[in-house]
Length: 311
Image 1 (cartoon, rainbow, N blue to C red):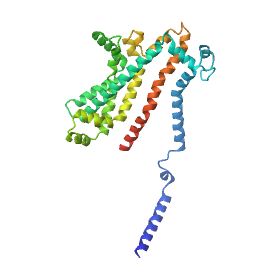
Image 2: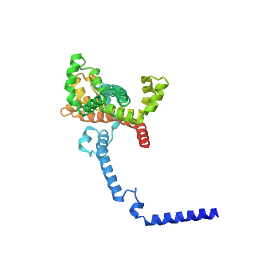
Image 3: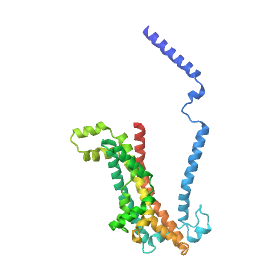
Image 4: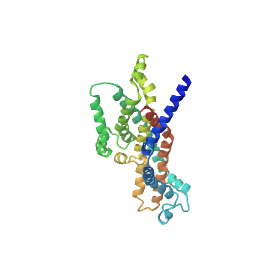
């Protein structure tokens, strides 16, 4: 008898569910599915943005394969008599291989500044997020104000400061200002506040771990995704930094790639073969950035997924 009651109850529930589903309007049942028009519009906007950003890169790749005559006489969006390896060889051997020196300088400026700026940003963000002390919010407000100040506005004061210390026209004049990233501190604080539980830090302290050990063993691991983000921002920013080296450096052997290419471009009107060298050098200069982004994106993507799950 009890079995009949259960079956009747289940049948009644199923019938009631079916009647409710039929009574619901189609729009309610299709909630969560984007309309076809919206999807087409979104895809169109994304495709347009992709073309906008990738077209200059495609033009650079095509132009890097042309000789000097083909650069001005053939289509800029199609290959004709490609000689990429010859052009790259010309760039690397020009002027006793000065371009290789510029590559080494750019790697030093970008890698050193990215590593230390990331570490300092994580440490500062961690402290601002997890320690209570007087004036914490005011310090953070000052750091946010630093994000708003453009680098060009600080170039002249930095030059005067470096002059007083005798560091102008040295590696230090470019490296030292790049070791601080206000935006990195902002990201570090926001991420540390959300990703590092206070209970975990208390457990580490109860186990006898000091603050530095807690940060380097727990904090850094939990902040790895934002560390990758800060590192990429700082690396790309230092790699493309033009104005600061222009102000600080006068020795060609200390130039980064972007400043050296600018010098080549400035004489291209008088020496036409410099056009192709400049384009070939620009093509080579984007390779390290592509490698850095492709090799680190999996850590970045993992951090985004982890954050979405926590949210």
